[in-house]
Image (cartoon, rainbow, N blue to C red):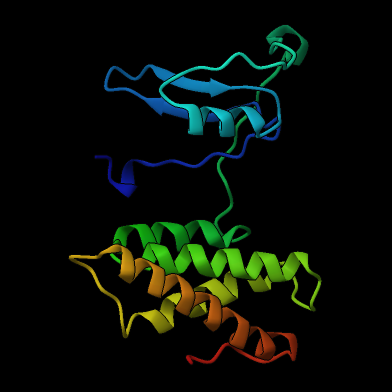
Length: 170
């Protein structure tokens, strides 16, 4: 498998390239489609098959330009959190995912969290999880338990964030 050091993230404002893999000979294979996640989602659940879809064919001439740039990891702190969780492995990726989902859901429900509170809550959950972190022999029960724990952590910690406080390790 690829290491996290082999994964690069780029900002692609047109949202046409949904994934890209560079092979050993430096050529790239990419999944392109309109700026709509329906096709990548259909592909992910129908793989290895391809389904005929009623979408307008992608017209590269109509697009004319695709641009890419490196992300500013200070502006997008969740990128570094994802790399950190991935490099740790074990149960940390389950905590990152659950904390991210919980914080995003609370943000979208407009319960008083700001957008920039999301990485703060995720980082707090990851830091608090280090006490119970499990690296090896992780099973489904471990993942589900960590998922539930991280969601509960975010729910409790968000009260402090909404009141202008700091995240405390719960």
